[in-house]
Length: 225
Image (cartoon, rainbow, N blue to C red; front, side, top):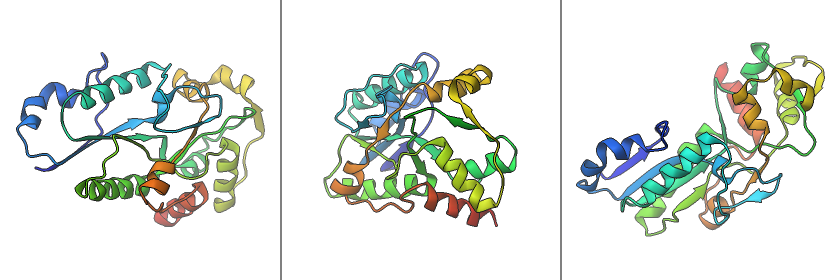
């Protein structure tokens, strides 16, 4: 085996289960490229500012701290590692369309809050692109994989509803909606950042399949038919 991709979550103590179990075996393999799928959550709360790969990670959430610990473990492993940091992932069967269809829609407004996203097709596309570049000697250690348009929850839900011809519930203020949110849901709203893909798209030459949520949601609707 010459190429390895790991997307297995960290263990509760922050250790990486792949390295814990298989490190010696991996060291003896003729690996040319190892990819690790991490999260842009390692950047922490950036108050809506843009973040790039050179920015110092400041995770506040426990799950993001565990991811950063795994990143460091892979980087210290001596393996030919490339870390891909991903924001919110969506795709066919897992998008705002399903929330609307299943009646789980909340229209929440929090001034200045945006979320970055990436369609599953572009995760796969970026991985193959990075593997090909690595074969040519170009392998930056960390790459953000995100689309071009960080957007509000309201913009995404309204566009999804327009595709379905569906109505939406009234808009709620975040402070009110937060009272009934699960701790996990609430944690997503506690951080605000725009994830830059300038390295991936401008420096490394990857062309996004779905440059924004509009293209991505249209694809999700098409795949559902």
